[in-house]
Length: 190
Image 1: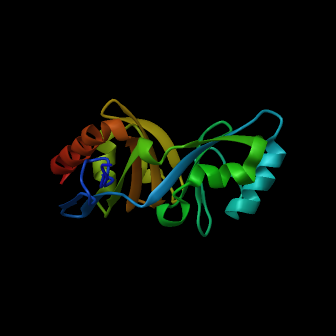
Image 2: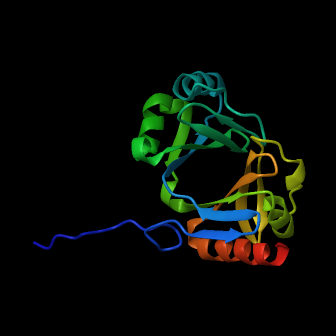
Image 3: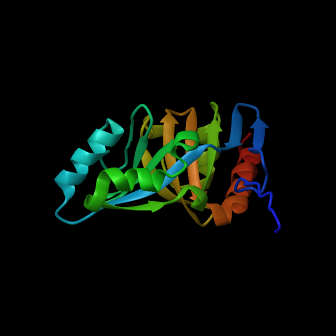
């Protein structure tokens, strides 16, 4: 019997996160987060809200917002749709954890390996993002989230700290293209 020694790789096909440093900006490929999508079912909104409050310790966020609790961040992605983030070390099976609590009030889908996430941190983050997308990132407040296109790729941009830190989520299959766009814009802006 052959025993396989498999190692997981990050979206940019490396074992450790890629870090790109510029004057006033750091772009980091993020690892260590579990991600699941949650969609409410028709007529079950109150039940879903109660289950989520019990599990997350926060109310479901309004459109364009993120609600963060001690373990979870809940990101609004569309009408009755959210992404749920948690530490991978404790929530590797995040979809099962959510489904056990939410039951039939919502539909849950594992998303951890389907997305790439990059953190843009520093005072030049807005300079880069405004070259890449149609969002007015300078007006985004901490906890704002919005879908947008970056270099023809559907992405989610989350403001973690006003004008200083943003998360950019894009499809894992396009991670290299998204990374290239971020680095190219940074080289152009800085």
